[in-house]
Amino acid sequence: MAAYVNQTVIKYGVGFGSALAMSVSFALNKSIFWAIIHGILGWIYVVYAWLFKSY
Image (cartoon, rainbow, N blue to C red; front, side, top):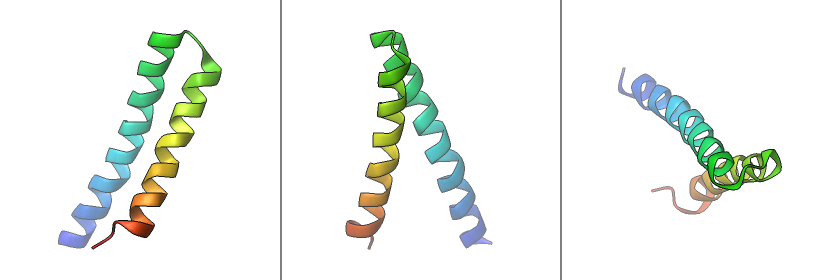
């Protein structure tokens, strides 16, 4: 049960985090290009943290 809860939290948390980063980026820059770049950079950080900061 705990593993399922952790996977669900991570799945929705990462999706919400990307959406939030993209919406804030668009609100500040008024550019879809930069919103997409910031969304991609968020995912790159997730992969970096998973590879190098996992316990």
